Length: 271
Ligand SMILES: Nc1ncnc2c1ncn2[C@@H]1O[C@H](COP(=O)(O)OP(=O)(O)OP(=O)(O)O)[C@@H](O)[C@H]1O
Image (cartoon, rainbow, N blue to C red; front, side):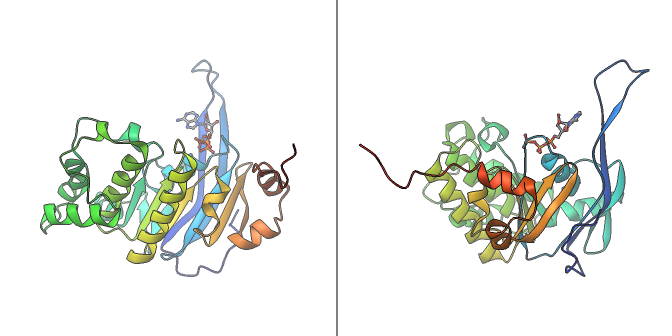
């Protein structure tokens, strides 16, 4: 199934007919498989900001892992600017890691607690052989995410959830990627911090001319941040349109259910 937005003719990222199956628990000899998605295609332009929403368990994170080339699809290919990444060479994978960076779901849990902020942000620079001044680059990105008043020698274990997410964003930005992929970047944060992270993502993508794909359960995160909204259901992308259009007039029953599930404040207060 090709996603409905065919307008992206020269995509930066291209998933071509990817499939994901999982073995169900059971004996090895009688093992059965479940199909999460089959033959799913998606084209994304380099400057686009996209939200990906869907009910829990529909396969969003699995799709993201394939897009990030962290996992290989069971069938299908992943391309970046026309070059095959999966299956592909180690060289193309290494270049891909430089171009597409990941912001994890639970930064407080995923950052190594004993490492300093400076070490964490410098790690991808060292790993990918950055040739400039690493300390300068670390302090540059710390300033970009408003961590400049925080000492780079503080350890990740000392940070609040909001600060940890800023460090994770700074680490992703350090090697000057062209595209960010974020998996539930605000889950676990309270409402004011969610708004701050949303504003920060908006700011860094605009300032650096980067694209963004963000998985979220929180549809309020995509409004104003993502130009394009994908809704995943039953192993397919059932909506793929401009965010405002989807929010104003959802086509699919599942999208309407997701929108109806957003809590609203009562308009009047009695008593
Ligand atoms: N490695 C795996 N082995 C077996 N099943 C898996 C594996 N990874 C994911 N699954 C199953 O695939 C389904 C989709 O998981 P996935 O994490 O992609 O969904 P999701 O839409 O991101 O969910 P959530 O919104 O709750 O994070 C789930 O039923 C999950 O249990």
